[in-house]
Length: 284
DNA sequence: CCGACGTCCTGCTAGC
DNA sequence: TGCTAGCAGGACGTCG
Image 1 (cartoon, rainbow, N blue to C red):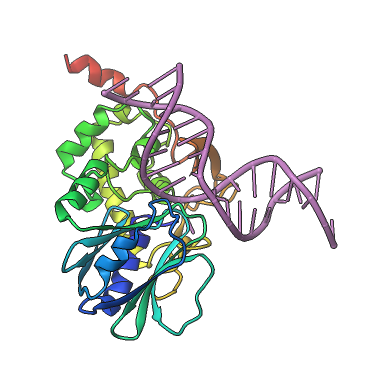
Image 2: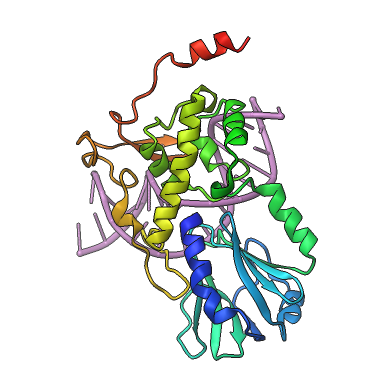
């Protein structure tokens, strides 16, 4: 479900009820999660104040006085702040009771998500650094263009690789490629430097717009207060198979790429022909 | 080394 | 009306 804009929205919406509060009690619904929950973690959390709530890529970091919680929403995960007396929804795996009468609740029906505790911040940093490239808003133009030039994968596949750029998922990969007018199958190293640079700016623009709309709610996604996002109303290609392109009226097409459904306009995102030949000829 | 593919899990729905 | 194959926003291990 959630990509960078959804995760950013969750972080912003749970932060006010969470920062400065103290965890009083931990209720575990199901220990057997993707990352098994340890009883020691529960003990470590009690009496701890929450110092900050942040995001890195699609990961949520709840910083405590001693260590941090690290959460990932997978496809169907929800992290919400609710009054303690509110009914407990099915698939609620973890609840943290706070000293303001609220609970932080983690629920996830498909259980592709995870939540774990790191007592050692260096280990947490290591864990994230091993997986994640730069934030899309911090991409250095030169590095980005060079990284793409090194990869022969289809550009769509590259965008889904979190170690290249952190936070882009299936929806925003498709939406960004449409906005940049690049065919999803274009081999990354065949993009001209100008195209690669345009794509870098486009990704940041699309993500920022999605954050303004509180993310996209297709089915499961809710923010930290249980509200739906609105960016699904702005989609140009995602989920619009056979519907007319908003630019040129050509029917949007769907194909399978990197095992994911991929949406594009065959007219606006026509495959470029023979452009890179001149480039490699000159580079020697 | 890089890239493609299957797997983890539950729930919904398009199409028969 | 009822059943089921296929699909869903992600990440990771394995294989070629």
